[in-house]
Image (cartoon, rainbow, N blue to C red; front, side, top):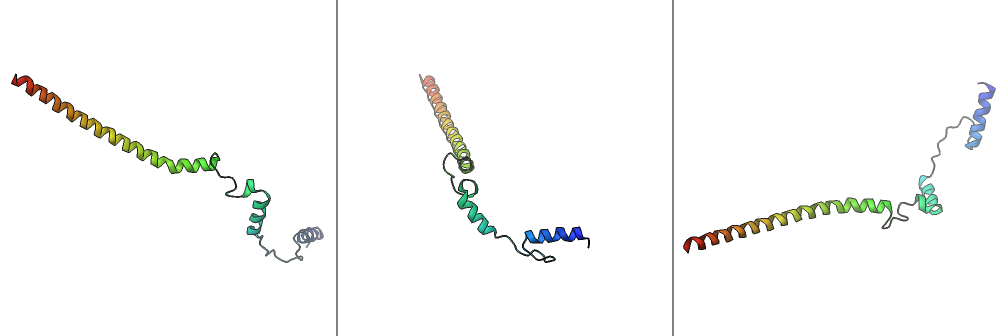
Length: 106
């Protein structure tokens, strides 16, 4: 092995606090890191820090939840108007039939 390569490996292993030639087996503690970030910078790293009405995430979720209800309400509204129109049409036909009957009997 070249002396320059050995020196680079030694520097790298010193930075990792491992002896030369030892593989790195330590995994970072992600849960601890998330905990520290949430408490140090809650506005940026906490998942539920400031999600309130007016927050873009809150408004997006609100739209996702309310959109099916709005569509259903529009369908129901259209059905109600259709039934009212049908009743009015029946009333008009009965009224015209009654007028014709009265006009024919006089």
